[in-house]
Image 1 (cartoon, helix red, strand yellow):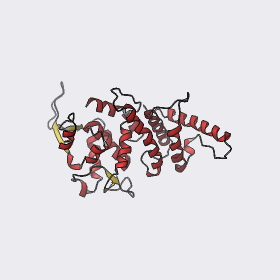
Image 2 (cartoon, rainbow, N blue to C red):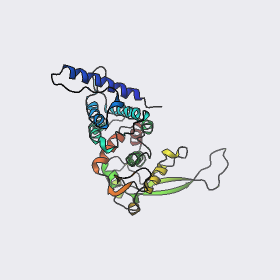
Image 3 (cartoon, rainbow, N blue to C red):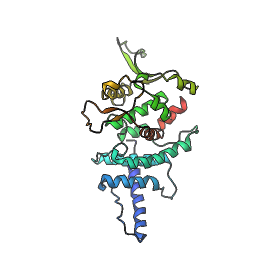
Image 4 (tube, helix red, strand yellow):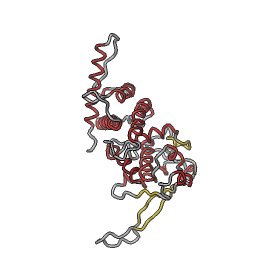
Length: 294
């Protein structure tokens, strides 16, 4: 396992010790914070995590980098899942206050490293798969996954570009498999891929944009395959929106459960929700590499 949740859990305990020491010294009587995360109710966790991401410090008292704070809370999420808690602190509407606070941290990352030619983040794609922040675990996680792949492979860098994306921009293509040396020819073997043709306005605005971008099939791991996850998303969208040219990311239905035939409404996901997702996506190493090399 790549994600070491002990870092997050230990940072939490250290932060709680500091907070409780402050409470003891204070003349105002307040309830101490709990050092065992699993004992917190969702309400307590939401409130405490807001403070944690703002106040957590290294043992020497200096501030953590934004991506490290993200890494710590991914670890906390992993710890919750490993111990049977089903809360998803990044996507459950209940934790909106926390994700707002985390967004303030995430926005600092792009300010710090926007023009950097170096990759300076400790959050890796694998950490997101491990902590169930990528995949088809829920409608919200699936949206985050599509945004992740669309940023990584389609070079959609801004919220505006993601908002301009629509179902009609993405085409499914089949490509014949080139023969691998030493392998017998498999008749009819083809690769499936997604192609994205940026709108003319995007090409005119940025001379570095390509006329076409592709997302390749991941045959080795279907659960992480961009094409299969895209197809699954389409299957969970109302039929009436599947050919629309003005929307791609849809608002999840509040009442849906995993086996509901439809997960999404016909309403577009809000700009704010997209921005929060994108700020987190941009703290991931593989995204930084893709954007630097595209």
